[in-house]
Every structure is written in structure tokens, then in C-alpha cells.
Length: 415
Image (cartoon, rainbow, N blue to C red; front, side, top):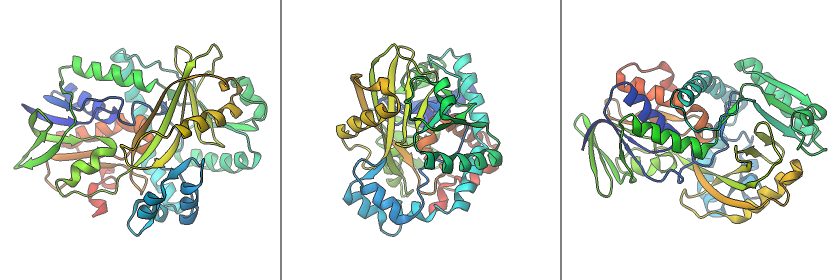
């Protein structure tokens, strides 16, 4: 099979990339089969316009390690993974070295340049393709149940908003309950991100996949086994297919590291796994996604009334099994902030692997100076938000109009 471009990965980055390239007139093959496997299917669903951080901002190396090993913590890992990744040049070691406030601010400044355009493309694509996204444009509310935490974080966010130009309002507890009556009486305050939007990730992913197919992108519903470079072209192999393409775009999320390692390209990518619990439908309604900040849990609601709870940043193998204890604990904690969640039956549970780089920036660009292989991954917790902007950057590389911002995302920065 021959094509102008082979896109490997059926998450939001891969789908947006295939969509843009096909709309630009390229013959495209999309490689990948299991939509539910990657982080796109079960994420929080927020197209976020606020603070742009892909990885948690937890200051201090030993604090990171202690949180990762503490039972019930939002940040978790196994002792073996913690030990391995805390060694020099391990993921936690690299991550902790980049937690200086100045570096965090600089990363936010870089990524914030992509956010408005990414939202514009999202809304345009949803509307022009008639995607079944269950779009909600009512902002998002970050609710706090600790006075100390709210005072500290609201100040930081206001400074961040003034620096980066996004809209956020600090609300007292009474105003939070006026906006979202289901919140518990103990809510002390909140941060209202006015320009956030929400989509149902699973429905949006399936709908975008269908739209890409309708455009004429050829589908190979199998995982890539290998990617090779041959002269000025690339060759992508699956179990039963082989695609020769002028370009190969590797957007396979947390599994990207394994594919690239086979051609000698090393990137310090880790799986920051997130958990999802979906409840039975309820007549009680929230108007927008609510982030229970004290416990780092996002609660959203589908059009059918099901509640979606997402949380955790678990450093682990991307194919490790789901920990049901985390699902139970997440539901128990969320019930303190939103009492109507108590007693609801969980009808679906999921764990997925966010692709995360320790320096908090994605990796987007050619793997070599003149390479026909482009990598596009590492958006971690901003994967849904920034996937359209990432696809735009990839299209620019292929069409010969590389954006200068790519200098910050180069795969070669880890050499």
C-alpha cells in the first residue's frame, strides 16, 4: 500500500493529523485499531483555556517521591518504578529538575500560544463535520474545600491568567453553589474558567474517526509493529499490512517510545496513567465540568446523565492492569464534594496512559534533520486541548512551512 503520509495512532492527535492532511489534499493511511486503548478515549474531556501545564506541578524531588509512594495519593507508582525512575536520568529525576518556578512559567508561556487556535479548530471541526461531541460551552469550575489551598492557588492562578491572558474568576463558596447546587455545603471557593469547553471524549473520538473515514482516509485497523526509514520515504508495518509513505507520523501516545526505540531514537516518555469511572445515569445535573481541586478529581456529565469521574497520575507500564481500588477511592472522595454521587452504581471503569515528557513539553518534529519520520506526542494532560494545534504543526512540517515554535518541541532536545 502506498500513500503520501501514514499516520500511526488513532487518538485525537492522530485523528486530527489525518483529518488535516487529507483536507490539504494528501493521500493518507491511518494505522491503529483500538480507540478505547489510548488516553483520548477516557480523558476528562475539557478543552482547557487556563493554566497550561502538561504534568503536575509538585515542587521538590523528595516530595514527588513521597507522594508517589503514599497510599491514596493522586500521584502514584510502584516502589520498583519509583526507584528506577528516581535514578539519574530517570523520569522522576528529570521531572524534579525542571520544577523550578521560572521553568514552569516559561513552559506555560510557550504552550499558551497554541491554546486559542486549538480551541478555534476544535469548534470549527465539531460544527463543520457535525460531530456527536455533546459539546458544552459553559466553562469549568475548580472547587475548593480547603481555605488554605484556595487562598494559595487562587493567587497563583490569577497571576498566571494576567501573564498569559486567559479569563478566570475567583468565586466564594456561596457563588459556587449558586452555579452548581450539587456541590457540598463545605465548598469555600472556586475558580471559574469562563472560556473552557467540554466534550464527551468517547463519542467525540468515535465521531471524528468516522469523519476521517468519510473524507477518504484509508484505515488499517491494526497496531504498527515497526516503522523504518528507507531513503527519502518511510515504511510502516502491521501484522498483516505494509505501507510505504513519503511521511510517517508517529502519534501513538504512550507506546511511541517503543516504536521509536527500534530505529534508535530515544525519548524519555513515560505513561502517566489516568483512571475513569462512569456511573449509571442520574436526574441530578451539573452544568459544566467540576474539578474537585483538593483531591484532583474531575467530574463531568454526559447528555444521558451519566457522571464521569477522572483522576490520578500513575507512573506505570502502559499495559499494566487497572487497579480497582483507585476506582473505589475516587468515587468515595468525589462524594464528599458532590453528595449526589454517593450510592451511584459504576457501569464502566477504565485506565489509560497519557504520554508524558519530564520537561512538561510535548515532542513534535522530525526524528532526524532530513527524516521522513515525524513524532507527535507527549501532550500528557493537555492531549485533548492541544491535539488540533499539534496536527497543524505537523501539517506545516510536511508542507514546508515549519512554525518557529517547533524549536521548543524538538525530539533532539533529549540527545
